[in-house]
Amino acid sequence: MATTIEPANELAERAPVPERTCAAPEVDPRVEALVNDLIGRVADKWTMLVLEVLEEQGELRFTQLAKAVTGVSQKMLTQTLRAMERDGLVIRTVHAVVPPKVEYRLTPLGRSLGEAFCGVWIWAEKNLTAVDEARAAFDEGK
Image (cartoon, rainbow, N blue to C red; front, side, top):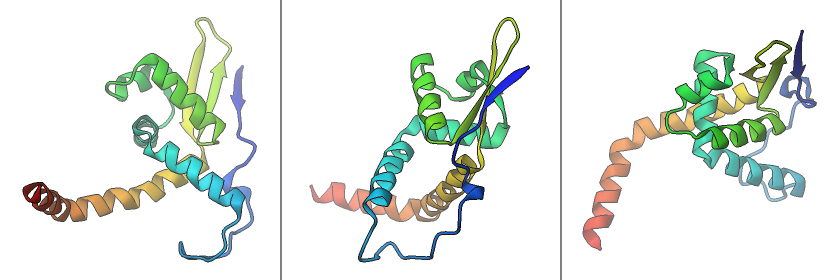
């Protein structure tokens, strides 16, 4: 029998949020705090790499994730997965077998973060040359 810990807050079950621009004059402090937390999470390279691997490969065991995320230590992968689980980005399933079997998969919330980050990736691909040129010009001016 497997034990799956489902996040309490699934994105798909929430009421739609009214459209707004990033320049809206008033921001709910709770939303601002969440955005700041999530920017910190997204800025963490291990979170984004785990997100990418789970998106591409689906449900994986810890050891499979460790092999797929090049360079991550066991401690850092554990911390990253716990933080992602707390944020509702991954689901951890523990199978009652010997030896223990634990698997991780993205939640709909995690997939939606991956989709949002995809826009940043596309922007980077489109603007790679321009950024390289700007950096070179800046470095020459020093």
